[in-house]
Image 1 (tube, helix red, strand yellow):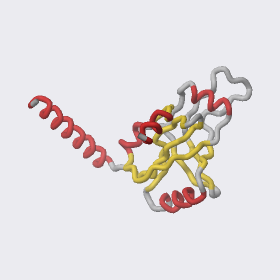
Image 2 (cartoon, rainbow, N blue to C red):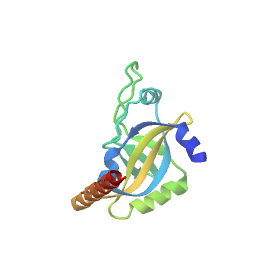
Image 3 (cartoon, helix red, strand yellow):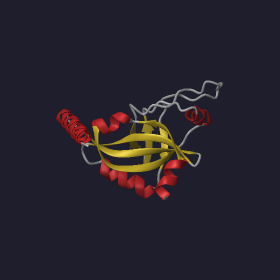
Image 4 (cartoon, one colour):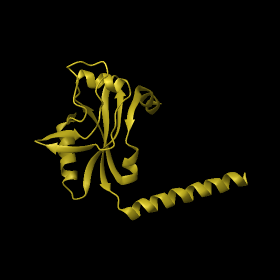
Length: 157
């Protein structure tokens, strides 16, 4: 019941669909994000892209780079820069845990989705390991096999 309420309160703005194809997701963390007024207005219009985004630790803080939030169309000189680095809001223990896990070779922080939760913008951040080309092919083959099994079961019924 609580999970249904949480899903109802979430209004997804953008999803990074390529993330699950290009990376093995090992852990997922929800973080707040520091934004300006025109960025929030642009997000309320449902405009954002997470495709080139990544998280980076710098100076004991976590930053989100490469996320594109287009300029607000009705903004004036107060408009924001579309691809500026944005600070992520996490507890110190979570930042330290993410720092120790990403220090391990091959792990990176990837944004999975950007959404409104109770009027605040949140980002779902994944600790992920990059997939090799053969891993991607195996995943596609596995998905195709499952689809074929599903079709066969439907035909039998």
